[in-house]
Image (cartoon, rainbow, N blue to C red):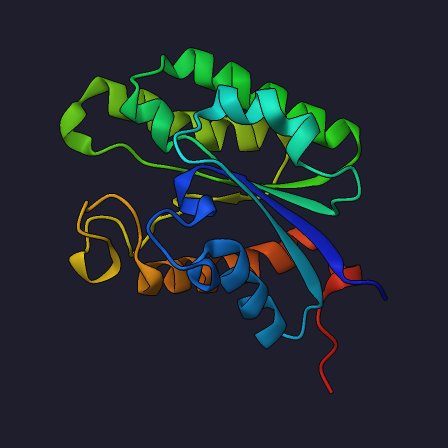
Length: 190
């Protein structure tokens, strides 16, 4: 069986902001999948600063048609730019609909806003599970779970994961990616 083609469509977290090339999420996710017996090619399609609308605009260019799975990891910059959750919902739904029409499987990764920003945080946080539910795609509730705001896992800017943080994200993502690929791609255990 040929390796699964997985495209990671994201922002600076996917692009490896502040890291060496071998420490970036596509490389570390590839390693985490290989350690679990899954042959995969992980294509990095992360652009620092991208919001959901930006990912939608470059989807046709950056997500190869041959992708078996697209991991959608966008949204943090929407929060930073105070994009209206309704617009983000619309853009995210359109992005996922476009991928599913190819057909490419989708794994949606959620983001969370800090609770101290009030009503916007609640509306922002609700977008991801709602889009996943209505589009019927698998969902990782928080890409930065166990990493966000923890100085052990972040660069000095306190926003971007360091190499240890990226490894932690890759270890969390790998089982969800395997499940999203479906039973035909499950590792064969001896």
